[in-house]
Amino acid sequence: MEIHSQWTFDCRPEHVWPHFLHARMDDTRPLLFRLGVPKPVSCRVLEGMPAVGNTRQCTTDRGTIDQRILVLDENRRLRYRMVASTVWCRDWVGLLEDEFTLTPVEGGKTRVERRTVFSARGFLKPIRQIGLWVALQQAHRYAARNWRRLALAAKGRAVATELAPGA
Image (spheres, rainbow, N blue to C red):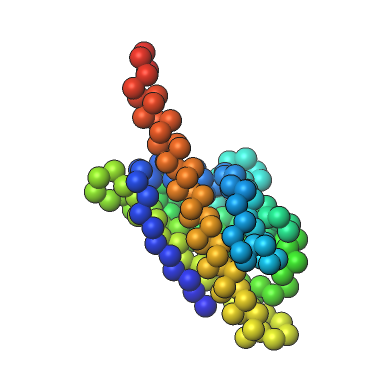
């Protein structure tokens, strides 16, 4: 199955991009996260530097998800695939791959597109597939809200630096 989401952020791609590779999410807990769906807490690149072949690790309130970086085109495109997990539902997932595309648009804004391809496996696969779809929809919305918050804060810092005397 596939989920496709799209948002427009009121900032340039370079304000959004870093947060795909290193971010700390807010403390809010939308309903599904209160019902046991793993809530993203942070992400980072384990090897320090983002590069194809390196590992992006998403930490949730239920464990970690390790994702191998497959495509990395700075400020433009990122794709990664889950390779390991300690999260309780890891045995449900046959495939989980995310791709982000950033496109500059008029007015200094950025269109962010996220495509998640996934499949369930194991006993009751069709039911698990639906469960994954619902959980990933929630994750898309939650992560996008946080990336928007982080990107706008980065844009504000950049503007403040530009306006600071002696900068």
